[in-house]
Image 1: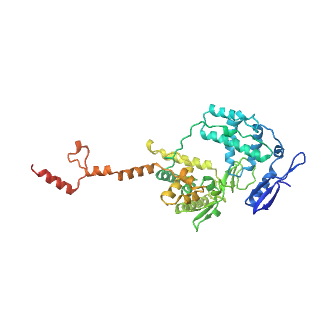
Image 2: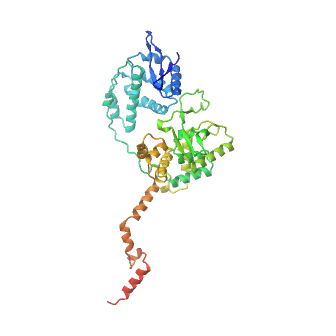
Image 3: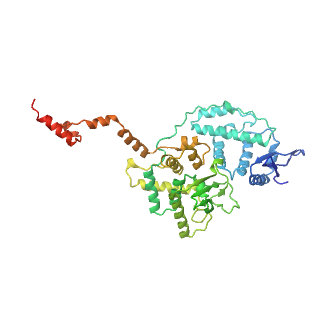
Length: 430
């Protein structure tokens, strides 16, 4: 049976595989899913896995480099439509630069953690990079255990200590001010840049760029003023794809698997977001672009997030040419628009943190509060004005008057009543 079979157990769908080793022993691995669609996709995936994976299941002694080749091929198939695909692409770079040259010849069953510790001490990398190295190795070990349940692996990675200092996270001034954003979006609109409506839509809805690029007209309920987020744009590593919504040149597909379970959500649309959608529809109609997507390329294919980011950065640089050096707009990514949306929801719309987390698709309100609520230079100006307005020392200074003029430099405003009183005192003859 190619790919195994699907059964229903305890209200869920269970995939049951069928493997047969050289000795004729039959193995039936299982995996449980919530929907039949996920189980069917996994079944089709298992049917496409080549025979070399079955041979690995019975092998009990291989090096890190040997198993990495198996793990790389396996993750290429199993994650091409899932959110972890980008993570595995980054891990390939980590393995090539920081793992295989040091522990590639070590046996996976018992990795020598001392060599990895020596590598950490000799190199000067970001603390986050060290953590990603350990996470990538642990992920490969966990995959090896799932692939061969009889495999006994001694995990010594817990003994590795990260000695690098923590990189300070930028909390202040990590988003654009609304004034700077207005200048940028006005420049994009005046020059009729292709992604101007998309940038405005991201600013109003706080969507991830991959979620916005996968939107279709069926996801928008115009009369009820909301939209449904259920798809995302993903980059895949397979050039020969049969997906109608994919472009083999850029290797981009529309996937139904989002980043987390909380990413599947419904978002209300304000007037500005609906205006951006109407402008986008009108632009597609004028350019006669036939597509099922709301924000496609000029050929109707799924857009690449890198092209959107490039257009956004070029617009910021163009605005900076007319500004003074001390008044430059900071170069920020598309994710800063998501943080600006979080700030507006809290400060202007008065949403609570639970509502903001649901709006942005976060798993917990702490994520929104800790990582997304940021301040800009406009906030610092408002705080300074508020401090001056409530400062009692400044209030006392206003009450004082310098009748002589204080060397002619400082003058205070005096009411008419105070002027008459001071004149009477001046006319008195002591």
